[in-house]
Length: 332
Image 1: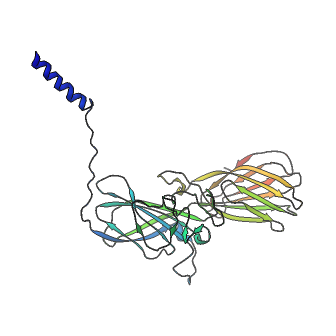
Image 2: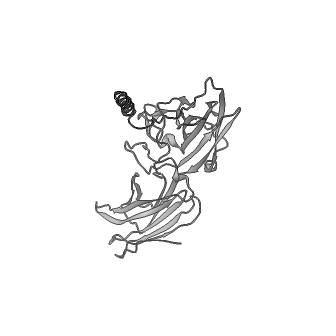
Image 3: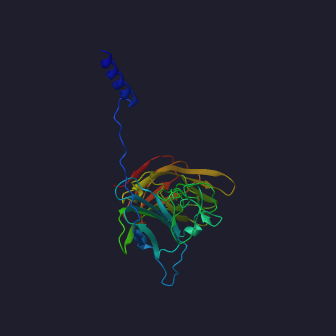
């Protein structure tokens, strides 16, 4: 009986030490030892090729290309930062990759970025800033790092020149692309399909006789039409969606953004004209016509959308001469 009690005591002790549960071990990810190195060239395709260039233009431009590269063992695991780089010359971009790993590339390009993005101590802020908040300097070569990486290039947030705050709809003509699970080979080439992640806004006034029209788009710097001018036009980047799917490169991507306009008269009076939620589509220009009247109040908006890339994404007419609010009526 004493022997049986001793055996039961030992079994209970073993059970309690194990927590009563089986131990689940994490799978072991094998990392290659002494992997072969490959030099791979990077190029760009897609909508970015539509940007016009002068035949006599230099290779170095004012455009900025931010590239973040991630790697993971071919045997499995999660992508981790591998290298990053900021370039102003899209020719001869190459990177050293290792055998036995898969790679993910993310890239964003801002047209005339040197004159659009805030520069501090020779480096550029968001979206090219690094994970620890540091600005990124143009070096025309990759920096290999697993601790510092560009963590904002997949989203629209940017810091413009002359504006210290972050804008989610910056005045930038921006492109984005990514490619995953690239397996390096000898003399390999990586082509990143770049899609425009911006939209156009054009405002035309009718009946403006003095002062200026102030146009406010949420999370963007303001636009102004000062008499005798009658229109203004600019390009804005989308905010994007935070996540791995990069929805903002979809052909049907759109964002509905609050927009308001007011008439700032020469005598200091401010007349509200309209406040509306407007749907902007990727790579489309939306035109708003404002009919300015002295008795202006919030009024109707009529929207029509056409499928012309950045040529015409819609026409909106705002008549401020009466008090009827007809809402926003998109054409089918």
